[in-house]
Each structure stands twice: as structure tokens, then as C-alpha cells.
Image 1 (cartoon, rainbow, N blue to C red):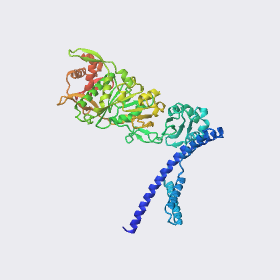
Image 2: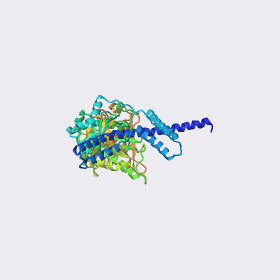
Image 3: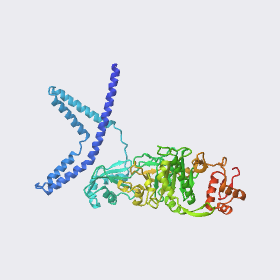
Image 4: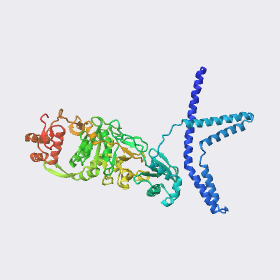
Length: 589
């Protein structure tokens, strides 16, 4: 190796070593600075305790003073030296150790060696301080400046007693991109849970506005709590309008990360009226209806949200339709499970048999309205009898068994209470909970778990609309600002094939799954016989649009039988429903 190349190699090695050393020194400097800010208040408290003990027992008759002195010495030992002092001590120790260890070397040599080591260490520290990544300066607002002053240990200690917070003391507060964070030391009578119950006293001590959100949780070690004042959001400044290139559910207000919820989860989406539940679910509904291997089924008795998606989803908006579509999905589920290959845990979605996401919009309404629905049926003698049916058993079966068949249930409700908004058989099957603002802590516990409040999942304190907590076993209780997807955007989305299960037999005798998307230009034509033929013949004979209730009188069939036949004929393109509700026959079919 030539001399220039060798010199270049040495310079590269030296630069790498310098960067590594500087990074280590910078991290150590940050660690020491944080520990000093946290532990120096403890030294001041120990000094005050020692002064009080000396005043109480000036002759040191008891062990009160000695105990206070030991506590002060312990507190001092726990406060690390600043980085410059630590570096100086290290250099002196190195020089002294070398001088003592090698007495045969002249003293002046070791003196200059010590000086060289000290200069090298000081240079490394200086380089680290000058070349460390620049922290983004966060300029506090007027409100934050006031809160930072009142969170200082001196102010807290002075006013804690009159606010009923005796026995608590703050550390040094820190302003972050998501608000102000401060550690709170607790004496033996306090816990993080008890401090959380004293939120009103904290708010009064700080003079904080009523709408400012406070979070209190257990600290990183015993005897400490962490208080966070959400004065700002990491999502501020981000474009929260939904767009195809921005397909995340929302943005974490603490970390600023984009939050997504993958398909294949059984969801519970809850929030009080006006919290933004429908808007928050739209990005998820888009994902569930996009692509050849995804199909969406929406059960919406309010007929508001489902109507927006009827060009991309199978929508059931009457109790009879709900029972019919649940029957189809349940039958499809059992078919898939029957033919699932041995050794395979879950069904693989294909364009012929896609992943089916069943969304129940406002579950409390479905539980009430789709229960004990009169359902006319014909027996073997041709007589019609009425029996009541409920959609709930089928939905519960889908919740329990649908995952293996690649059929997922999403339950949405404004009344998140067990037995009302969330059925008892469905609640345990939920794998991911999305909770917007709810009215009471009890509702928050139903959605997010019984341990929700103790771990900081306070959905009853969320602002509305558009802010949610997402508990999936991976995320913490950081609020998420959900994206806004306008109704016009949903309506403008391109059409997707509508899932429907037909009864056309295959070579094996099993019914096939088809994606039915009839268009006026190319209607889907299938053979018509039996009841369907009677209905079609009655419509063609009438010559004018015929209503469904008139068909029941003309053919003598029950309303339930007519409803099913009309649905089949409409799906296959043989008849068309006019805007006024009348039915006409498609001559092309």
C-alpha cells in the first residue's frame, strides 16, 4: 500500500472512531442531564429535611439528624456529575494511574501525557457538543409558558398543600411536540390512581383551562407518576383529508405516525352521537371494498351510510334483507370450512371467493329491529305459515367462526354496553377496538377493556369529533386524529362487483359464489323457473310497472316469497326497479 493511500485509510479510521466516540459522549451527556434534572430536587428536599431535623434536635440526642444526613448523602450520590466534570476526572485518573504504574518513566513525560489526554478528551467532548444533531426548537405558546412556570417544583411545593396535593412534587417539565410532560414524585399516601382522581385539584393549581386534556399514568419506577398536558398535537399541520395516496386511518397525535388497521381483524367501532364514527369508518370501508379479492356487506337499517356505498357493497336496509344476507354469508362460511384443505388454518381469498367483510352499522338497532321478524314460508303441502326469525344467531356464528373462512365481522354502535349495543357472544371475539368519544367511563371499559382507565385509555375524555383510541394489543393509549372522508368522495369512488351467493349448482353439487354486477348493456342472464317464472310472467303480463305488494295479490304467493324472488330476478337482470318502486321486465333478458 502506498503512503498516500495508507494515510487516507488511517484518516477514515480516525474519522469513524471520532464519530463513534462523539456519539457515545453525546448520549452519555443527555443521560446525565436528564438524571440531574430529575434528582436534584430530591437533594434540595433532603437538605430541607436535614435543616428541620437539626432545628428539632440540635444536640443530636436522637437519631433524627443522623438519618437525615444519610438520606442527604444518598441523594447526592444519586446525582451524577455533569459531563465536563466527569471528563476532567476521567482524564486526571488516567494520568495519575499511568504515573503511579510506570515510575521509571520521567515525570515530565507523564505530565505532558496527562495534558495530551486531557486535551484529547476535552476535544472529543467539544466535538460532540458542536456536531450533535440539532434538536428541533419548540417555541412555547403563552399558555404553555404559564403552565411550565406553574409546573416548576418551587411553585408546586408552595401551592400543593392548599390544593390538597401535599405529598406530591413535580420534577422539571419538558415541552414536546405533543404537549408538556412532567414526572411527579409521590409519597407513601399517593398512587398514580389516586392522583388521577385529583385531576380537578391539579387543574386548579395550574390554572389550566377546562378543555385542556390531562393524562396521568404510572411512572417508570415506583413512587412516581407521569403527568401529560396535551397542549398540542403531533398531527398538527398534517393534511387529514382522505385521498387514495393517503389511505391510513389517521395520525398519532403523540408520535405523528400514520396509523393503519389491516383487513382480517374483527373490529368494534364505538362512539357517541356526533363523535365521528361514520366518518372514521369510511377509510376502512374503502379498504374492505377495494380490489378483486375483497367484498363488502353492509347492514344498515338507518339507510344513511349504506346508501353511500351501494355501488361498492351489498347493502341490507330492512329486517328481512338483513336475515336474508346473514343466511347467505353464514351458508358461504360453512361451505368454505367444509372444503378447507387439510392442514390449512384459514381460507385464501380469490376473485371467485373473496374476503368478505360484514359491517353492522348501529348494532343496537339491528339487535332490536332484526329480532322476531315475521318470515312467511311455504311448507311441503303448499301452505304458507309465518314464523319469527332473528339475525343475531347468524351474526354470532359469523363472529365465532368466520375468521377461518376469511369472513370478518365489524360491529359499530353508539351504545357500547354489553347486552345492548354489543351482544355477549360477539364482544369476546373482538380483536381490535376503535373507540371515539363516549359518554361514560363504563362505556369506555366495555369497548377498551376493564383495565382501560388504569392504563390511560380514557375514551370518555376524548374531544369530539374525529379523535379515537385504537386498542389492538400493540398500540398504547395515544389519541389518533382520523382522516376525513367526505360523502361526495365516497359517491365518486369507482364501482366494484357486488357480492352475492347464487344457487346455481356446479359439477360437485355445491352452490357457486358469483360476483353479481349487472349493467344495462350486458345484463347477467340465468334460467328462470318455478316461483321466479311466476313472478316474471305476472310482471310481463301487467304491461305497466307493478309494485311488489301487488305481485303478492296477483300471484297468491306470500310477501316473503315474493320479496326473495324479486331480489333474485333483480340481481340477474330480468327485472328492473323504477325510481317510484314499480317493477318492469327487461325484454332483453
